[in-house]
Length: 486
Image 1 (cartoon, rainbow, N blue to C red):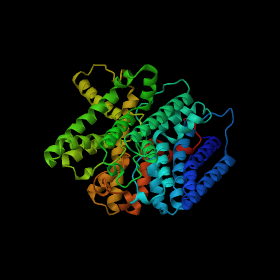
Image 2 (cartoon, rainbow, N blue to C red):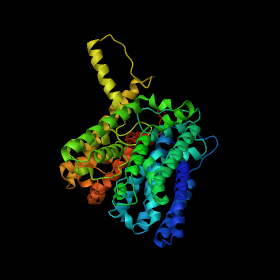
Image 3 (cartoon, one colour):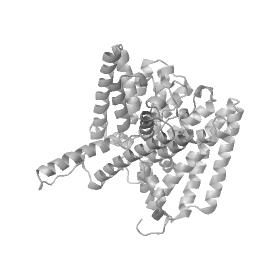
Image 4 (cartoon, rainbow, N blue to C red):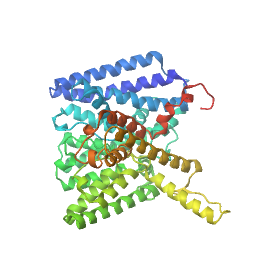
């Protein structure tokens, strides 16, 4: 591995991180938030200092080419470094202790949206803006956004893009990787702008509209009120939010193609159609269950079902009502959508619908082969032939998610949390949702977790955002050794 290249690009990333802290610093200074302004000033200084230190040991030259290992290292270490620098405003401003600051930062950048702050309404607006920005920067991907504005990385750019985008398949729409990243970023900015305008038209003031738009399109779920969406009690806003959460659960690569070939591309995408079918069925079941079991008003039940199915399936985690009080069947369907997540290439977390489709097709293929041993068949998705390696990759990822869910639940039970709550927190954390059921329910926060569980939650949020194997590769001894096999 060329550590000089890795160090140089990490230096650019830390400098970019410092630049993103300038808007909250300006807001803090403008509103006379002296503690906040000082905290952001210190954070910017630390980012610049880190940049100088990294650039002392590295730097890019014209002939440099980023390889596979460099790409993985830049992605994994870049996320870790930015998340650590991102905790400084919380800690330096005196708003949170060191561990809670770490959890808040990791949760923000990973798009989990789980907070340890029990009363966010007492926070200054600059900190609220930084929380939302951390969601937004982490949603599409810190390194992908950086690639959109940074110099060409060479052939290693493809490895970086693969490492940070989510899902079993990594579609490429442009010949040049930087153009691809710019196209994704342009769609991301456009959707965020449209979302902010929509929220403002639904009655939110400008600051709230911008903050919620960033966390919606990023499917992060940070809000500026304790009750997030329930504070407004606005049906139009809830329907608008549900729409943009569903949109954010679709592949951004699909939207890039749709801009070039027409909107029909979206509805020809098998994964997105399956996702829409799943959330439609889930919303119908939850609405009917609320009407029959709770005697809820039909319109309220439909509104609550649509919003929370969209919120949890997209792994955004916004809360309009306390869904922890819903009947068992409703909670089961909500947890199922939470576990499945959105589409590959979206900002949503979870297992991804594409993997579920591939695993079901794989099982069906095995059954057909048992019945017809000489039959030769190929698996397809959206009209494209799927390689066996992709299918096995989906199976390996499913196995890894289940194992890590069990491991995190075991850690929390060791830390004193009961079985049901441990499973709920584990699933919601690994799916990057945040709110779940029980101790991390709709009206609860991660502040209730013991310290060991909080610390481990940071690691599992990091693993889930980079889809596990990128992070695990960093812990492989052979990864850091000189080898011609990479």
